[in-house]
Length: 156
Image (cartoon, rainbow, N blue to C red; front, top):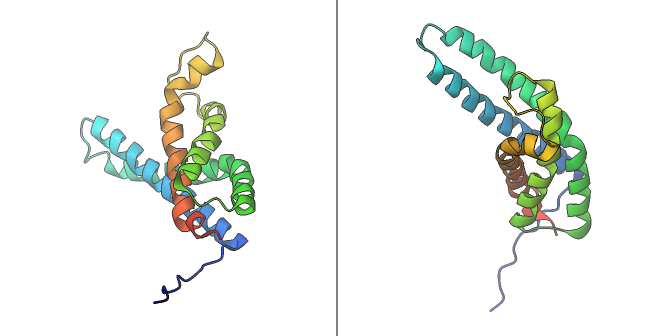
């Protein structure tokens, strides 16, 4: 008995662009919710500071979308090209690619908001930025998983 044919979905460049922006927006929303929740939990009277927290959240969301979008664009373009060229479909490749693309962004993001991160001075660059590696690596893995789910698993 013949096997039913699986429908093949080809991945177009527009799919990559849509995947990129959906992933960046999703990550920015998740980070904004996390930061907002931490700010609210640290407040003495969370209900009185709620309007300011909402304004802060919108600003964080907009800045996150711009910063994540700009910082991740070049590594993602390179990864898109490699994935298309070699038809990478395995999830672990996308997770590893996301982590590797996110780690070099740590110094740039820290330089954009130096007062937000409390990092030690006077030590080598790896020692200084290593406390942020799990956060950025997790975000990169999340973006890699989103890329795989929306586009990468459909490569043929």
